[in-house]
Length: 125
Image (tube, rainbow, N blue to C red):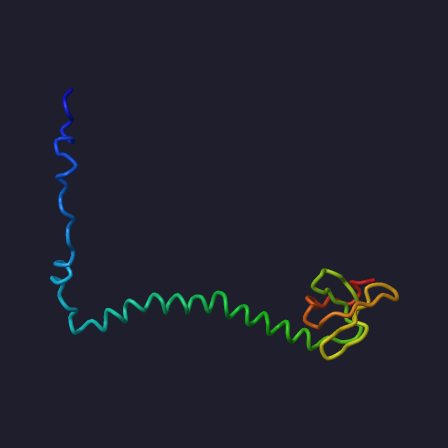
């Protein structure tokens, strides 16, 4: 039976593994002017944070500010939507809670922060 050309070596004659220690010793030290390359390598990271701030963080802060102003401006008789999607009219106001009348004689006590939207007058009947 003829042997394939790849089977000419036996398993006992394997080559020794390449040692990379000599390569590590052969590397040269960094040039003294390497500070500029560090600055350029950090530039994309800084640019990513700047873009992230203007795309995600700043609009979220603006939305929170508008929501806080809406919550502070609540008044008795305002028609609101609370976080669960229930529509109602503000019956009583407290420091941290609002009583929302959802039907005749039915009031829900919810946190002020759960008010999602103030509706125009006449929406809720």
